[in-house]
Length: 259
Picture 1 (cartoon, helix red, strand yellow):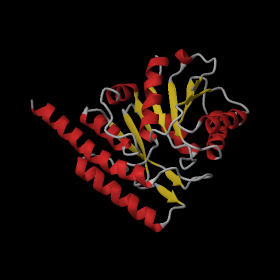
Picture 2 (cartoon, helix red, strand yellow):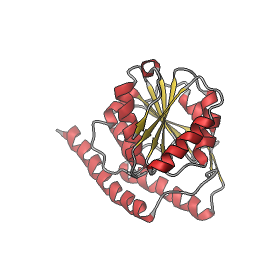
Picture 3 (cartoon, helix red, strand yellow):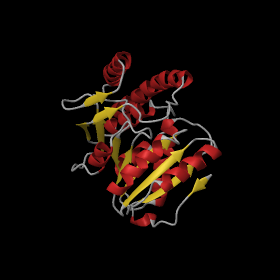
Picture 4 (cartoon, rainbow, N blue to C red):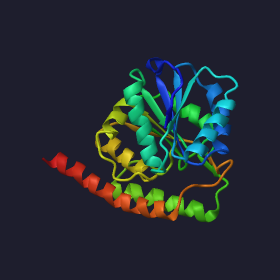
C-alpha cells in the first residue's frame, strides 16, 4: 500500500529516506522536529514495513506532528518486513523515478538516534562528495546511552569489516549518510547481496569501488528515544551471511579491473 500526497515531486532537490518498522512512538517525534528545519525543495519519504494497521497509525501520528513545514512529506507502505536495506533501496528507486531534479539522497534511522542537528548538517554539508557518512568514530564524535558491551561490539565490527573489504571508512555500520544522485544510480545497478543493515556496507563498497568520493564527518549518536529495537537474531545471522556475499562482490569488482 502506498500513500502519496498531492506534491510536486519535480521540484524536489533533496530527499530524506527513513526506513521504519513499528516506530509509532519514535518516528512522529523525529518528523515533528525535522520537518520544520527543511525547505520547500526537500522531501521526506517514510518507507514503512509495518503491518497495515501499525503503518497507518504511524502515518497519522507523523502527519499530526507536522504543525508547520515548507517541506514535502510522503509514506510508502510496503506491508511486510523486508529489512532496513531493502526499505532504503525501495525509497531510492522510487525517488529516481519520481524526482528528476533530486541531487542529494539522505538516509537516517527512524528511532531518533540520529540528532536533528546532524541530519540537517549532513543534508546541507558543503561538499560535492558522493557519499558523506555521519561517523561515530572520529575526533569530535560521541556515543551516548550505550552499554560497554554494545560499544565494544560496534567498535570491533567497524574495525573488522573495513579491514576485510579494504574500505576507507571508519564507521561502516551507521545509517546516517548522504549520497549523490550518481552514487544512488550506481548502487541500484547491482543486485543487493543483503537486505539487512549490512546493506550499508554494500552501498559503501559500490561507491568506493566505482571511484566516487567518500567523506566522513563527526556526529553525536544517541540511544533511541522511544520504542524497542526491531533487530532480531535472525537478521543478525542474515547480516553475517550477507557480509560473505559482499566479499564476493568485492572480488567481482577486482576481477573487472583486471580484465
